[in-house]
Amino acid sequence: MEYKKAHVVSVNEIAPSIYDMLLKAPTISAQAKPGQFICLYSNDSAHLLPRPISICEVFGEHVRLVFRIAGYGTRELSAKKTGDEVTVLGPIGNGYPEIPKDKTVTVVGGGIGIPPMLYLARKLYENGNELNIVLGYRDAGLFLKDAFAGYGKIFVATDDGSVGFHGNVVGLIEAEKLPVETVCACGPMPMLKGLSAYTEANGGTAFISLEERMACGIGACLGCITKTKETDGHSHVRNARICTEGPVFDSKVLDFTGGKR
Amino acid sequence: MNTSVNLAGVTLKNPVLTASGTFGSGMEFSRFVDLNKLGGVVTKGVSVVPWEGNATPRVAETASGMLNAIGLQNPGIDVFLSRDLPFLKPFNTAKIVNVCGHTEEEYLGAVERLNDSIADILEINISCPNVKAGGITFGTDPVMVEKITKAIKNISRKPVFMKLSPNVTDITEIARAAEAGGADGISLINTLMGMKIDIQRRKCLLANKTGGLSGPAIKPVAVRMVYQVSKCVSVPLIGMGGIASAEDAIEFMMAGATAVSVGTANFRNPRVTEEIVSGIETFMRENHIDDIREIIGCVE
Image (tube, rainbow over all chains, first blue to last red; front, side, top):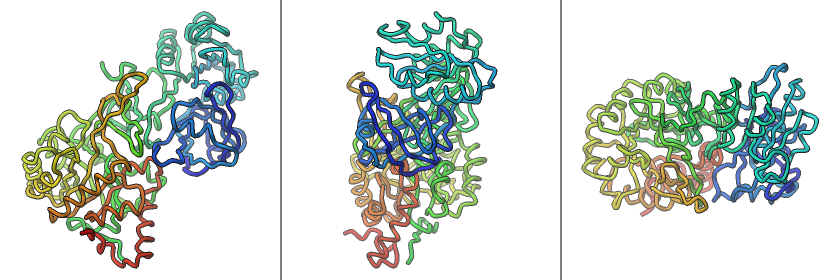
């Protein structure tokens, strides 16, 4: 993990409000594992907290980020020009676990949870895993879908039914009877909860990537915790840090009731 | 050039400390900062038993600041004594342990356990706005402040700094109560209670609804309170509230702080504390200040 300036190589809008940014950040690209993220800092010190964004891909000295404009920080990032500098911290978090190559993996991305699944899908493909790639979108703006071509069998679900399966990714997995022995996912919390319940009910294991509002990004502030069923070795209460123990968790360790047991 | 200051008999190599709750016990930040370069590390509030803290979201950005409602999550004094203080032990920096509690008994329980530890100073948090009982309920009533300060001083073998809340009408009344109770020093300010609403969802952004405001937004309030308190008590002050640069630190010292804690700025730049230490030295050289103690409370 390092804290330093990175150079912006390019920024492009690839769907409405969805931006594709390439950064030159050699240390991060050399260290990054699928499922990890980086923190980016605003140039305006009035916006003082870092923005955590997942790593979409790495090539050579470059890190690719695909993000949606959600507020001031992401809007500022979307307006960066080639050659601009941006302060970054990373790579952060645990990333997805290594999966034996004989396992068939169902890779699931929902909305702005799709980008980190690209790097994961490539790594699993290179590892020799057979993949079912399930992508959930709001509508026909199928950003990044074509980038998954060649890594496995691709399935698309849309909320409005304009392309592919009309409904959510869990409905698609059920309808297509896709295997859920091993699932890797990132997306909105309702999707992750539904997918975890379906996977666990069918005897599988779901590795899901969570997000939360963060302050330090390095495990000190305890801002980004998630409730777990058991106490962990760091907190000694049932609060794992998403930035440090996560962002990827085996869904079985999580307490989706938010600790209200 | 002398940068060292004295806090109730404890010599700090420089006046720069970390604000409790923003720096853990230094472990996570030690990959970015040489802890040996800091005047001291003020650890995150520890209680006699583990605390789970509040639900998420626990943090939210605001203009030039942030709200937090962590709720003093901590692993409890047993883990703190067996893991956190041993981690800090080899570093040549003061170890200042922040203590929190719901009741007087809880504060005393933790303070007693720290008597035989390597802690140099205890900082008592009677000002957290994010816990239902304890914290701020002690810190906003001068009678309670004097009583709990006395009780802690009775059993503590370490210097005791009381950390005050700015969420009061007259900070000097609370500061005088802490001094009357025998406090060896005063830390101020804790966060200002605030709220942020998500207008799309028509809900508070923080799960706890209210949270503590910190960061540069609160600095003028903090400087004013440090100034006012320094004029009415004789014990040393640790000043904090929005310090993000050496210039900010110097401003607090001129207002009357003997040492300063850097908090929220750690989230924007994990190396900021070390940069502030060197920035203070640069300021001293440029302004021909031989001894940092010259500037403490120099503003009339």
